Picture 1 (spheres, rainbow, N blue to C red):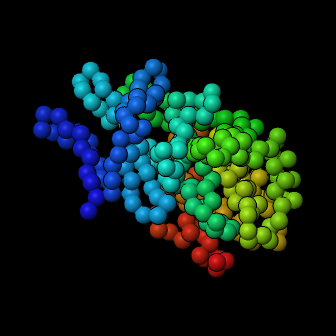
Picture 2: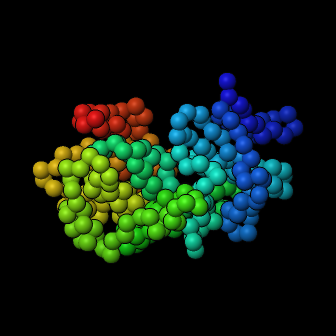
Picture 3: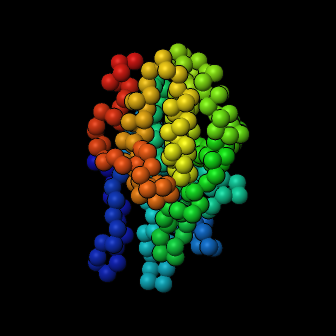
Length: 271
């Protein structure tokens, strides 16, 4: 039946959430959230294989305990998640809406476009200034995965990097676009495109996809539609739109959670 978590004061419910199971995050250790402030975290697990966790953050303030953020972690287990990259903001997470990528092939890949957060004094919110990263950062480690474990190198050493857009396009075009095993160049192209979009460079993302994708390789229209469809349903869609120029590609869609554009692989019949 699951569990309910409620924050109440004087008989009033100030915040509530439900999950299959709730647990104290890291045994209740203070979580730095910026500007010297800390919070206490509680994770909610949805149940089911591989998925999904949400980190709920609460902070003791002048008027009592307050809910300051609910951060979707996707399939990243709380025990091995790193909330801040080296020399990064206190809180940075990958948009879980891009987990389990399904175009042009489905290998349960995650694109992990990354959102830095800032503490406003009342809540955590996407940091619009920090989101506008250089193209080089988007093609580098700006969107490395946030999971760490003792048996694997840190995320910034696991992600492929490229010196510039032309180099990324050349590397992708040189890949094996017929493979059904390992990392498909189309998935890597989508990962780079997602990071470019989240860094304020949606036009460059479109250029990368259309110049890197070989004319005879299927899946480009489905990939572009899936990027737009997933972004439209992201809880961070407004922040991503604000980071980009008005009218930028991929940013004008409406959210359709069960729409076919979110599950492109099934329409293509490639399983």
